[in-house]
Image (cartoon, rainbow, N blue to C red):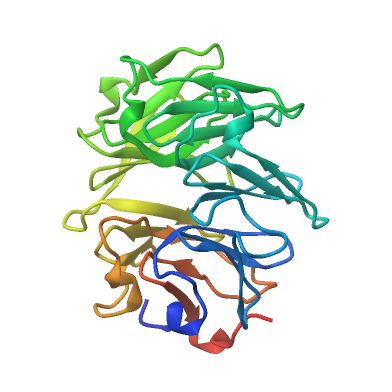
Length: 312
């Protein structure tokens, strides 16, 4: 980590708000940031803000989650339960909660798409929703068997089509037939916060407390234990196989051939507040050759000393 230079951005550099809820990258290389004051696009040189006052605009400024689908479209949700899709050809489409029947008026704080092209929405404290490609919407309120009232904004599908959902009270499974249950006790997850991450190679990881597990079939293998770092809120496996972990208030870690490395104290990543999530993504080498990451107190981008210039 000592070979990295650090660029940091905040409201002084054009961000509308210093708390970032999510980060995504579209195929054109743009980075997109979800903030409480709108959607932000970054081209490597400057920030462009899309909010209620712009054209095209958003139904609400408080952006909750971002997701890039298989067609390259960017999806974004907001604090009032609205959903927006920005297609790769530049077209915008909105789904507003007032027009959708059972659709909750609540923050959508996580999204993921299944193999059938259905977009699954995790409503904070209000269960799950499923938006079909033809516009149909199914709503699944929380029930006693699964603590979705305390959901954490991370969910993924595994190779069997099961939806894995993070919560502050353990990992939840949802089978394709709708059954929901907690992760087996045999997995050995500690009590409390647990959430999933799916790498580009299909590997499903689970962060539970200060432990990192790899799911293999119906088993969970404990791979790393990283004590003393508080809650981990974001994860990325890069093209080298290294694991990057964003923490709630202890900065950024990388687990690789040299063990656990920590972004030096005093860097921007260590400024996160407990009320917001960190996020970490990898920029393709063709765009910048670096490994940008966003943290809740503005945005910080670690980049190798040889490629410390702004993205083109």
